[in-house]
Length: 64
Image (cartoon, rainbow, N blue to C red; front, side, top):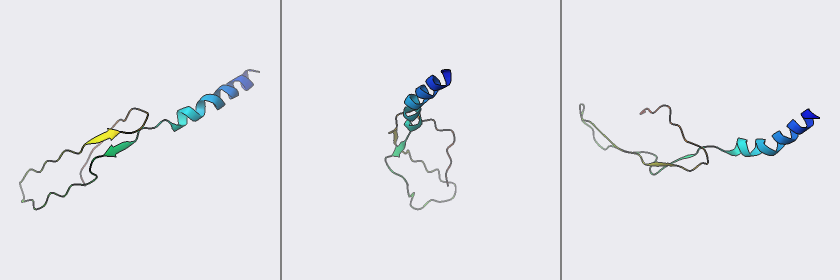
C-alpha cells in the first residue's frame, strides 16, 4: 500500500519538478570591439535576464 501511495505522489509532483528550469536571455549575444591595439583594455557589459522559473546560477564566465 505504501508503494502505491508513494508512486501516486511521485506521478503527481515529478512532472512539475522536472519542467522547472532557469533560462538565460541576453540583450546582445555578441560584441565586436572593432580595432584593438595590444595593451588596450576593452570592456563591455552584457545585459541578461532569467526567463525561466528557477533560480539562475552562473558558475563560470570566460571570453573566447
